Image (cartoon, rainbow, N blue to C red):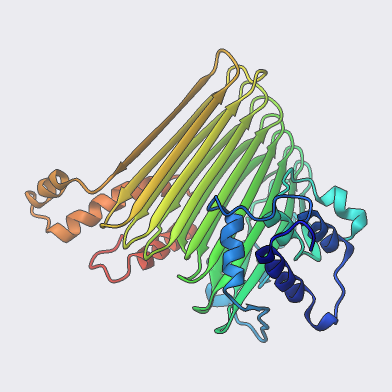
Length: 427
């Protein structure tokens, strides 16, 4: 393939073989368009440890498989809350379950073709990784909440991954969610693996919030120590929108969670809370890109990372305040706690301010458990192990505040306890 190195050609041929096994099924025009675009860009950059390079190295060193599933039982995997549930398995829609009489959401499955390419390809991105993952798609999911609908029950999206012993299962999703004027809802994303074999999950999620929308968006990743989770989450906000975003990145070998927010109109508010627990040689990256294009908007970020057992965490945050975004108020905080030797955290906050009369701030802390705090608690009759976990809980508990659903709060706490399994005290 012209213009590509031998290594790139080897990888791309392997990718073609994976997409089109034994030439039984032809690739659709949408897939071919993305594969052809790869030839026009810098495909492989050995100088940077990018998502793209890690993806290529991973696929070159693993057999690629498509796991089959039959008679899957999943009731025990669900969060015990009344909701409108949509179940996906290995990249495919499985079932919709409605716990209520209400069915507020309009859900459609749209096949991809050259005709839908321009309409669907609304993401301003042109990297080999993006085009490779898009080449997996045969359809995308479109979810709409109509104007002035107050959805009492959350939309619960459960993503079940099933791996295979002798290969890497590649899973790709593209969801577009539109919340029309005056609508209000809660959306829960829940990612799990039901065995201990590796999966590579890539999610492209776009949420468009029209005027006066209210959204609570919660994301939970709890897979296994061999799997990968890569997510691009894009939010486009109109006027008078309030969004609260919570991310619980609890278990996986590698997580890269990117959040892009664009304020397109005035008087909107976006808050983010993230908790990452990279343990046991895992690596998690939290990446945010907040663009204030219009005035009188607020953004508030709080990201916490706890590392141990050679886990590494990384936070990269960017706030851009453009010329027309006067009276903007934006804040970005990252707190990190390192529990054991050989664990590591990096933090890179960035501010770009092109407007006057704005408030913008950032802060970073990286530390270990304070021995003086341990001594103080022990002097009050608390043993050392319990004192340690009182401090850890105090650090992470702020990430659980404002989770209004009690069952969801309890469920997430239980997952956090599992992450600390083997420890004497839980939360």
